[in-house]
Image 1: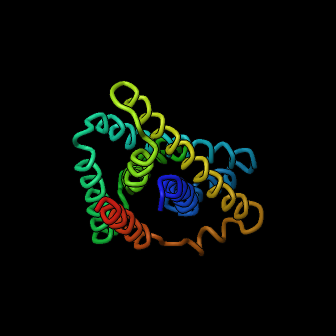
Image 2 (image 1 turned 135 degrees about the vertical axis):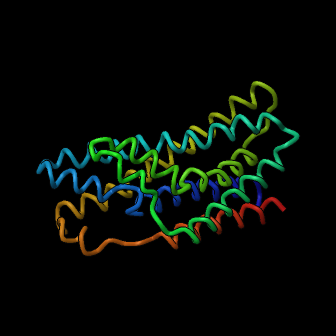
Length: 215
């Protein structure tokens, strides 16, 4: 697979992870539905989705930008990639063993959805899942040094975060709109999907694939 095909595949991985995060109830779309049902205003649904998207974007940026700064150390890029992959695998194993949801999320008021979304994404490792993909894209596309390298890696990180979040918000929004307009509150109370195991296994898979690609 040449560099162009590799880069294209990695960008599709950014899109796929965004759709996966958006469809996962744990990333917040049921809260958007609940907000609209309580307010009895369709507009509340879209405001809630925007707030969730904003919080998710901040979480992605908070994880990706430190790694973009680390890549300034050209001689350590290989070690950084290995460390990131191992970190993702370790988090996946931890979440597989510890199935309990973080209690502090329940203490965040429902009116502060952006904050809730940020904390939920950080707690579940949503940003870390993107790190190996981002490092692969950066390695495939980047061809500069010094100040140019810093600007390039930061630009790639920002683009990955934005593309991922837009897809995440659209995917969650489609489900939320469908539930709000056709399925209603009964669906939320009786049809909750538990994707905790799938989420943990997906982290392990992403990390393992990244390690395999490095070697």
